[in-house]
Length: 282
Image (cartoon, rainbow, N blue to C red):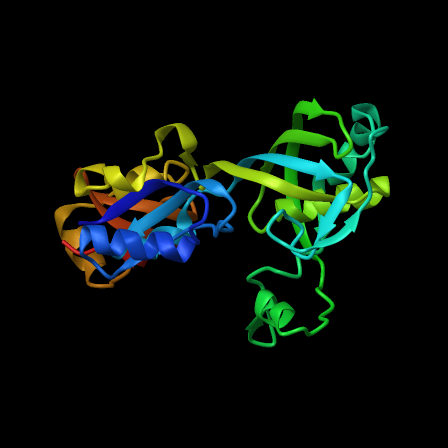
């Protein structure tokens, strides 16, 4: 039983909760996930089962979200789960004013993660330090946001903006909401977040927990469409599975390795030599 599950995470569960539930349903301890989702968020959470956990670093990159930002309020967590820090109704705020700042969030940018996040400083997670009352200066990080599309605008005392955002790993949508509000001078927070794409897994093919069975496991190699494929002979495959290097005149890079139609794992070619990175069991 090796493969991936495309889980539609419900609100209120942590990513760790989801892993624990899959372990119980499938009766195996070796389960991992890609791309942590906050408890408030819902949507795509890729889950790896058994030796497929070793393939998590090789999944395709890229994430997409549908997010709702509320202007006029800020919180300790930069979302509706935290305590209110400021309350400044802004009924005169218009979509045109909001969109003037949209381009500032697209491209490779510097972003300060929320104080309540799982990033570690000095071996401790930021949310642990924040809960203990410590005032920690959170360092900025470089993230990439490919696009932001406005889906809807709801005016009012606390206007709400619904967007679709495509971004790279490590991007905090809560920080986008907070910083957008800062630029407008009224403050803002994230009130809804749904991940629609993560590491090649799409929302429209995700499943709920009540549908999980081994039959829904996605074959490991199908989750790696971005990697090229090479096929070894029977003897070469036996040697490679024992950890030996194979001479091959192929382009350098990371490859999916097969013997016939059987997926053997992941290898790397350098100087016309194929070395094992991940060898899956027979």
